[in-house]
Length: 109
Image 1: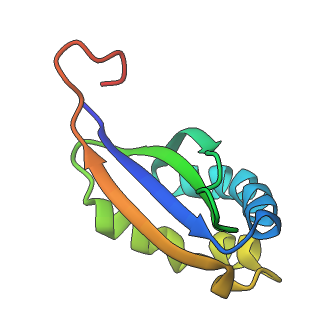
Image 2: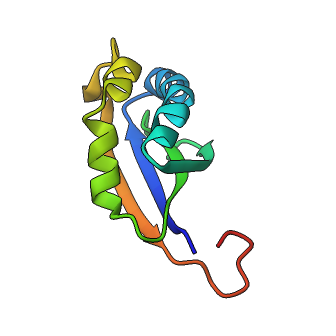
Image 3: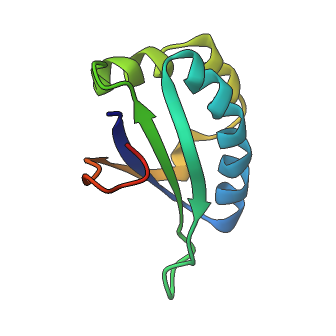
């Protein structure tokens, strides 16, 4: 059984969200090299009265892998640095991470 993680990025503006969507398309192959599989990336509606936007990514790790170890390996990689080149990290206001455990009947296991 895989370990799943829902990652929620809060971005400063619609423009920052658009730029980060493009970055995420670059992240997918680099993450795969570090044994992090991407199952989907989504955006949600704006919070009423706010410019902030959110991007959601569902990723998984092999059952025996340490999630933090795999994530740190990717974040310190040349692939990650190349993906993020030219993007102002100040546009990311926050990142929430939730580890999800599939139920017995979940299609994603």
